[in-house]
Length: 189
Image 1 (cartoon, rainbow, N blue to C red):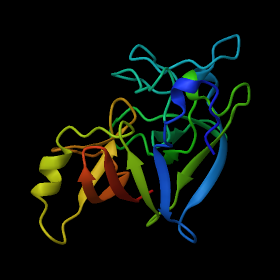
Image 2 (cartoon, rainbow, N blue to C red; image 1 turned 45 degrees about the vertical axis):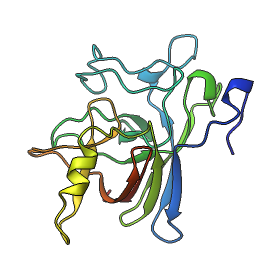
Image 3 (spheres, rainbow, N blue to C red; image 1 turned 180 degrees about the vertical axis):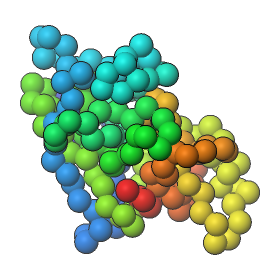
Image 4 (spheres, rainbow, N blue to C red; image 1 turned 180 degrees about the horizontal axis):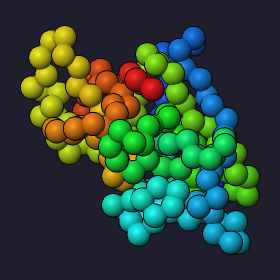
């Protein structure tokens, strides 16, 4: 359930919904990496200038100053998680963030515990802007039957279609793109 603390957010929908996950999906309990908190305990967005725990080339995507459900997460030390940076095979994605973190729609407040959905073959509906639609329509339209359209962690932490993935690890397979505002994906992690 989305906890609304500001009337302007009353029509905001959760950007990640589990469609098929009764036996495939696992809501993995963890915590935010310490790098995502300021000294006063408030949320700190991952910036392009960050080098620890992951070097970044772009700021993490935020909506209303916070992370959105559906953001690709990477396991750091212990049970801690950090936003994926879109790097090559050295960084293995773990799953998709289940919570709004920070900003106007924060699910956590002072708590540092988050959920990360993972599980091969689990299926999710992801609403915009939790994915990067750049190039996705063309990739979906040009897809050959039986050849999956793979999605990867983008440099801002959102799922993205990549023309030349190199050694990057795919996070999900695109099942359907009904519109620029919604996609259906099957996790590969």
